[in-house]
Image (cartoon, rainbow, N blue to C red; front, side, top):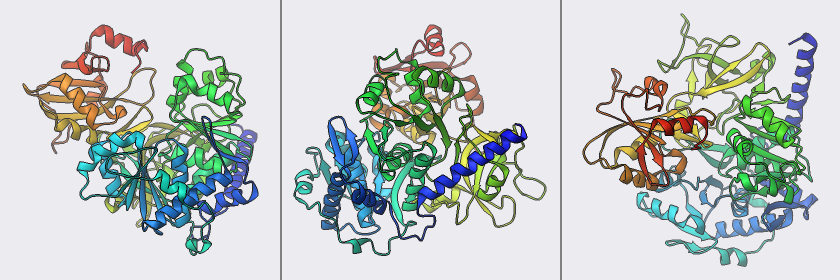
Length: 594
């Protein structure tokens, strides 16, 4: 990069960062402003502007605020107060936004539950949040019922959108509540640093962890999208990602509402409906994950794919080989790739659209924010240290773990579990007593200060846009009939994002592929179920009895190269069936999409 080009890039970066900082409007955790205050500001200024759209349903800012007031009044009536937690299992619909805003008006906390979970995993998410109650949409009545037996004690449950067994119906109660503003004294003393949401992340401990998200952090997520796109009143943001994640709910939805714009909510992502929705609702922006873009790019030509009014999109995980063709085919003027984690303090934005990069952080900014990449030995699962016991910064081109110094400016708010919080902190990094947040991500930086994502560390891999914890999958396998041992890992499939789940298993005479398929269908969300099984006679372990994975990952799922029998999940047969050489070739070539 030439000197003039570097200076120009630095100026653009500083201007973008300054724009972001101005948009936050709550630069300190002790500021007396919350997410609810910001939304109520738009209610006063532009009450009749459309806030939410889903299909033929529309809510103006006034109507959204009134519905949230109704929800808040109901919550007050059952004893929900400041700091109390309410778990919501509502899916991608306006009711989730209404509940979240209503609870924020009370200073209460919304635990955003992944509606793909079932059984013990779902019960775990509710209990680690110490929820006072749970609000369930009738669409997910079966998921909730599967979790009830796993709860350590009964929990009050309420239903929206119909009747669900074991819950109290809430629709008529909310209809009868007053939409008038609440007494403003209910939020007296509430600060930006106070808790706002629990958003769940899989991590490497198995079951999901509840990450604490303050009002400040929630607003920061939102304004990241506002400033980077930029997003303005009158714009329309298409939200096809799950609202229980920080991307769909925090950046896309939060960004639209804090900007005074409109959020267009899709019940779920659909490649066939995507462009029609964008045209029908005059969408100007959308948020993506890399796999969403790949799905669209691999879809047949759609009559609306270039009739849209989209100005820009923002997201992460867009691979270099998809970026250019996607932007050209669909006529997207601006793509903004970013990097960040729900709970982390390491964040960056690719403001200038360099293909493949997740962002650029000039040296001075890295020093101010405390963002570093340090050497990490994947095989030994530990950080390299110098003769003084300190971590070693990576040189340009070297791959290491991205970390961020924990400070008053770069906060790490942690999880509901102190143990899980401590595991994400790296101490005595460059000097005695310092502390850094571990992203768990391997990255590299080039000599022009651009950062590139390489892979996840450890036992978590991504598939279908979701984190899959191998220990959770292993636990489900371990209780299945006929399985003596299970070792779960992710394998790459050419042309597909992330890693598909694979399990090396040791079985006995009770092993039944069809019964195992049914068991995993009951116990795990679809993205977490192993795609491949490798059946061996014994499990190779380390000297400390940990399962070896490196060689298994390298060998992959090619039946011609793997010495053990390999099975593949067959949704049509609802079973695991032998993986033939022909079927393997079809998967690798992309003829069969998993």
